[in-house]
Length: 161
Image (tube, rainbow, N blue to C red; front, side, top):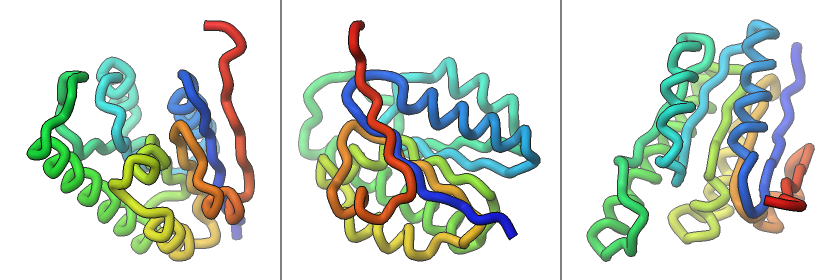
């Protein structure tokens, strides 16, 4: 049986989602099923429409509604928190049912940094992972407890933008 890995792509700037998607494309080329759940990244609608053409092999889910980049009031933060929790519960369901070989949790590390989720919640999710499943985590920073338990860590950093 295939042995999956937990990988992290993190850093300030662009490129993390693209690398994760590239890994997903490679996986569907190897006859694997891929599920991508986007957390806190609702500005890239053009790439999402393209990825939807790869269904059912590559499925993408977003739980947050589109928002303008402006200061969020208390009501919007509560709403966003609820959406992120729904996305996380859906990720837990995917892990528990084992319905894919690769799960991309895009932007989940930002949810921890901003306090919407805890590192302990993510640890618990990773503990439930079937051995064959790859999980890819992305975000702008890496909590130390998560870094200690993953197989591969890649820091993306721009030298010039």
